[in-house]
Structures are given as structure tokens and as C-alpha cells.
Image (cartoon, rainbow, N blue to C red):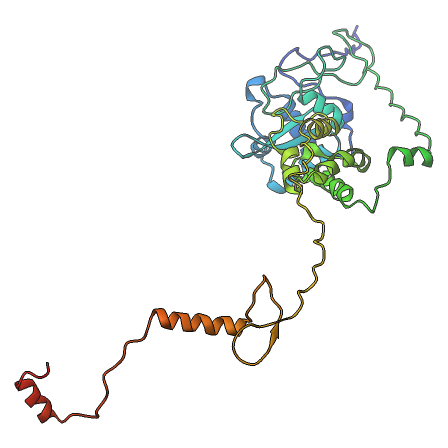
Length: 348
């Protein structure tokens, strides 16, 4: 009697090591191309000793062209899986720090993770590429796992996250209170606000919003009122930034504006800009010099006019330094007569 073949279903459990766990959010994402996904997975699979190179080096190892790497990097940044910071070291060179994660991070979360974050955090993130920090545990979306058991059906997918309810429309009155209007009649206040908004061009960590800049504009304008040039104010706010970055641009700039506030100028340092009282011209007087009667207007109590003073000075100079008198000229002398006088010793 022939026995019917029996079908057997075998389940293979992935090994504990030598594999990389990927979340479904990354695999099924339609906002990232395949190059971005593969590049992200390669970075996550690297051991601790090999995580000190730039992201472009790993893209070159994968064989990505520069254009493919730019598109993949753009997708990773847009979706929150890659964050970058550029800062200037003590030698004046620009350095770029890159941080990759297996979950999407906001800018504040990435900055907190870069600076170390809280000591006890419910969700540990992925350290950034090139960082010397210790490797931290990864976190994933709540997906049902097999936990080493053989199940008759595949694990269920994670439930889709619900989008938070939209915030109510802000009140116009509250917005006007939080963002005070700038006085157009105060040029120092307008210049200070523009300077604060332009600090992001000097360092990306000093990015301020319009409301934040207006909240600090009054302190910055006080610097300008105390005689500090705008270039010196910019240098005081952007020089010697912390090596680990600026966590809060508003708090950092407010601290520097308060602690480094220059003293008010003393009255002695303030130049006297009051207009001089108008002076009336001196009256006309008669000149005491020779010649016909004539008048002039003295400047400092003179008794002679200018032409008379010059004539008197010239006569005094000729009297002290008389001109030498020349011998009378009797006309041209014939050469024979001159030779005879020379022979007799009458001339030289």
C-alpha cells in the first residue's frame, strides 16, 4: 500500500549575529529611492570600528555615481534619516558631522542625540557616522516578533500610526503679542533684527525665527546705541562657539548679549556735537599805515591792514639782509686789453 506524500512546513529562524534588522517603514517607503535604502542599511550594518568614514566613502564602495549619491543623500535628509552639521574648528577648517538613524528624527531630536541626550532615554538612537561615541541599542516600530517560536502564520504587520489632530487655528491677538512689531522710527532696532536673522549664514546652529530675532533685537540694539559697530557685534556673537554645537540658538545668543554687554559711554567719551554759538564780524577800523586813508576788518586786534603789513615786513627783511652791490659794467673788454692787464697783474 502506497503512502500519500506528506507536506512539511519548515521555519528557519534568523541567526542572532551577522544580519541587520530593517524596519518595514524603510523597506516600504516610497519617498526614498533604492540607492538611499541600500546606503542606509549598509551604514547600519557596519561594526563599531568601521563607522568613522564619511557617507560618500560608503557610497563609493557600493559603486554609486556622484549623481546617484547626491539623490540618495537628498532623500535621506528629506525623510529625517540623515542630519548634517557644518562647523569651523580651531584651525579654521570647516568640518561636516553626519548622523544616520534607522528611524526618522526631527532636528531637535538629532541635536539632542548628537550632544549625548538624556542619561536614561526610553528610545536610544543610532550614533552618527564618524562619531567616537559608544554604539547604542536600536529601536524599531512595534511589530509582533516570533521571539524564537515557530508560528503557523507569518507575523502581523504593525498597525499604521494615526496622524495627530491638527492644531486649532492660532489666534491673531496672541500672535501679535508674541511677535511684537518693530518700531520703524528706531534704526538701531531694525539693524539689530536684520543682523540677528543673518547669523545663520555664519553658522547653521545660530538659525533664528522672526519672533526669536525680534525678542532679542532690543538687547542687540542696545549694543549699537552704546557705540559698538555692527561688525564687532557680529564677531562677539559668532566667535568661539562651543565645540559640541549650540543646543538653543535663542538661549545662547541671549546669554552672550547679556554677559558681554559693553558699559555705557561716559560723558567724557561722548563728543560735543552742540553747535557753536554764532560769532559777529569785527567792525571796520582805519589802517595806521602810510598812504591814503583806508579801512579794514581786523581778525585778532591788528592795527595795520594786510598789504601794509606785508610791505613793512619786506622793508624790514631788506634792511636786515641787504643785497650785494655789483661793480659798474663798462661794456665788453677786448681780449688784447684783458691780456695786457693780466700780464701786468692788474686782473686775474
